[in-house]
Amino acid sequence: MINEATVMEALQRVKDRDLNKSIVETGGVREVSIKEDGRVSLKVALAKTGTAEQMQIQQEIVNILKGEGATAVGLRFDNLTEDEIKQLGGLKGAAFQGPPLLSPDNQTTFIAVTSGKGGVGKSTVSVNLATTLVRLGKRVGIIDADIYGFSVPDMMGIEARPQVIADRIYPVERFGVKVISMGFFVEDNAPVIWRGPMLGKMLNQFFSEVEWGELDYLILDLPPGTGDVALDIHTMLPHSKEILVTTPHATAAFVAARAGSMAIKTNHEIIGVIENMAYFESKLTGEKEYVFGKGGGERLKDELKTDLLGQIPLGQPEIDKEDFAPSIYPADHPIGDIYTQIAKRVIEKTT
Image: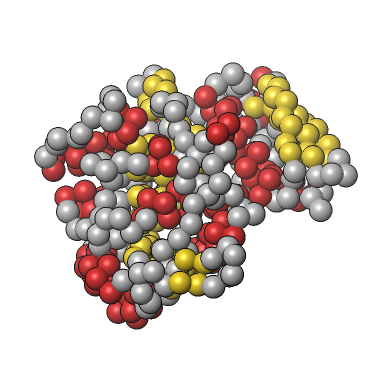
């Protein structure tokens, strides 16, 4: 059961953006109350309240404590006194809020999710990996880098649009994941008719002009294949990790190997293969039917000398009309549990 020591240790990971120090270090955790049923109530003091950063911190605290076992998190905010702020070194300017996302000093782990061909469920894997990592207490963002075939907002049931505050873009949050997508910047599902240089400029904006805050992981849902966008990503992120998504079919695995070869040639580290649509399991009999054949994931991981992170069966989450997210599996769903095991393996391989 969660206790005060666990709460305080977890909150060491939450920074007051205006002081660049943990809210524990600043003395900002004023009150902690824990009920027998796991409900946690906090009073937190920040250097500044009523800001976009406060909203980020609020969501971060909720996600982290739920990841530690809290059943619910209640928050009240207060201001640190002027004397406290002075003793802590004073307010930091924008230049002190942390290194840019692409700086070598940044501690974010980039994970590119890619495939050799379309239609293998790469975006479904991306959004479920992101939401599952949040459930495990990680701070996560996702860039829908499939600029021609953007689908992440629809898959996650996002209807809101990013806010622009002082020339900075604030990503939309859904299920604790910070999301940015080309889909936010086109009207009425219009097609994107751009050439390579324009695509590269938009990707660069996603990295440099979006206020991501502090992230443990940034998931990049890449377009299939080895085209301009994938090449730009490989150039921008020289130290990214990569996950290859395939189906069991031999052709899907064969073309996915090309994307894997590109990753290797650009010094990306392939951390594993996910075999999607691995089988269909009957709810009536429990029997597995291998609709697309067998062995694609195994062959691909052997060729790339990496691990098979998981095999995901054909399925569909139950649709909640009040909280619509057509592609997100809850933790208690059998496929949601598979994603939990995959996410734990990803954490093990990246920390």
